[in-house]
Length: 102
Image 1 (tube, rainbow, N blue to C red):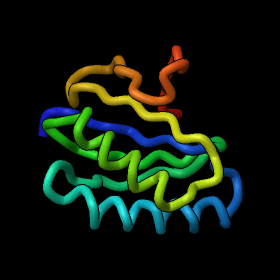
Image 2 (tube, rainbow, N blue to C red):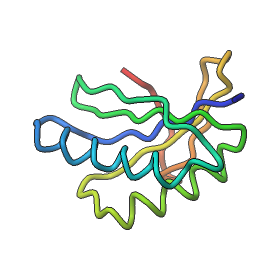
Image 3 (cartoon, helix red, strand yellow):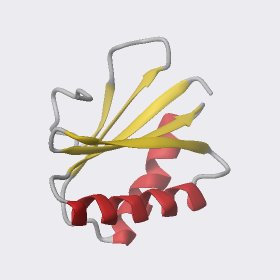
């Protein structure tokens, strides 16, 4: 896989963590044909789900539907980068101007 897609959510509590792990499991189930969910990290007020794919826009479109259907209460941010690169290409929300993974 050539790209890493990151789905990022604000998360501070164990309830946030539990909800987002359930979401991660749904993404594993739904993205199998286009991407591989490569794990998550939790800390510094955020929860990141890492997705490996050769088609970041397609994987994001499918992931965005899963997130919307899951009813996550906080705002998702999403961006991707080539695995060997450091700079992210922002996908969501359209108004976002900076993306980092802490």
